[in-house]
Image (cartoon, rainbow over all chains, first blue to last red; front, side):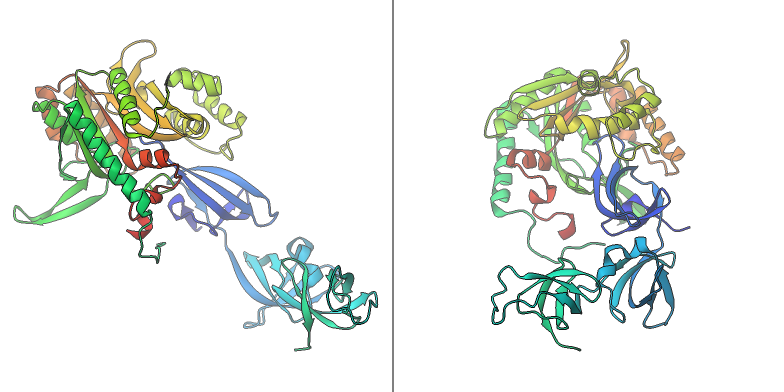
Amino acid sequence: MASYSTNEFKGGLKIMMDGDPCSIIENEFVKPGKGQAFNRVKIRNLKTGRVLEKTFKSGESVEAADVHETDMQYLYNDGEFWYFMDPDSFEQVSADQAAVSDATKWLKEQDLCQVTLWNGSPIIVEPPKFVVLSVADTDPGLKGDTSGSGGKPATLETGAVVRVPLFVQIDELIKVDTRSGEYVSRAKED
Amino acid sequence: MTRNDDWRPSASFAMLRRRAKLLRDIRDYFWQAGVLEVETPVCSRFANTDPAIDCFSTNYTGPEAAQGLALYLQTSPEFPMKRLLCAGSGPIYQICKAFRDGELGGRHNPEFTLLEWYRPEYDHLRLMNEVADFVNAVSDRALPVEKLTYREAFQQFLQIDPHIVDIEQLRACAIENKLPGVEDLVLDRDGWLDLLLSHLIEPHLGEQKMTFLYDYPASQAALAKVRQQSPAVAERFELYMSGVEIANGFHELDDAEEQKRRFTEDNQRRLEAGRSSLPMDEWLLKGLSEGLPHCSGVALGLDRLLMVLSGCDKIEDVISFGFFRA
């Protein structure tokens, strides 16, 4: 079983903690001049997203978590699982609701997502930073208004609701920043 | 290995000027006080055996050592300075680089600067007063001084007596005070005391003042005399300012037999921890057996003092090139 010593600790390192894969956020070295050295670390549980702190005796080892991130293409959802495919190996994996979480509202078939795999199974799915989606529903709005002041809500094809300028119409394609959930611009079909 | 691609210094020139001023003030202070400045070897055939400190080692090859000779970089200049004292130097001080493997963080740089001085005829309490006087002499404003025994500090901040509590009580205290994720830690008694002191007490020490802790548990004597009372205490002190450990001093152990016993015990603990034992300083032991004058000594982290005096929280801000640029 692979393991890391506290000397290898740094931001982003993936370790096992209480049976769950975790990522180190912060690592602080604490040592009295003449005494025991400690590593005080902040870690994020990758399954729950919870941040916790932990104190290690320096020099101790912790089990490494077999976690890696990879770009995968979103295929479809069968009501229970979301299916993704490695574009190089064509290997498919299925992610459950917990892994897909908030990403669902941005997922459009064929889009490339960043999938975090733990022992080969998805635990986190991140949508592309920008997605192009069509507007399924919105108020017709005022013609000629281009200022975008205030805007109006629009429901997109994936179910996400985004504030858009008044000139955006049903069936138009728009580009959205998934990190902020904000409208960026109108878009054309690729 | 993380390396900083920036070739420029990690400290500002304003800070480097302040550092130069501090060095000059230190030399003025000790010149006035009649304390002799000395230099001693940075590399030695002998090592520091302290199990909590790791030495760097290097190798000399050449005349007199065709096959190579292992040398250890000093973790403090204590041993050769004590040999000077044994030889009759009188009061001495030194500003030098010290090296400790494995120590890197906001307050640690593997190579750092120590100011170390020794005062014949002083006990640790008298030297504490001189340390306070010294710090006030080199800082912009005079700070009040607080003195707490190690026991008083634990009683005041954690309501426990560090001399009598057992490991389970120490663990319970850590958990009760919400130290994160310590349930599974395996530590010896001194390890738990170190954890509580460094995480729960130290951050509160020396706020707008100098706080001295003194009379440590005998098990943490290092190179200090132990006063046989109940409980026995080590005549050792530490200075804290703004929650940072600044200096460590001893009423110096002058018993060669006892010193040898502590070195041997250190090496035993190293072996138990699966590390190699290190050559103990035989010259120091010889010097001690011929007689170390009754004295106290203190090692003060110059970089840390500068951090505290100038309000920096990263050691690399006060040294020209921190570890990532070295």
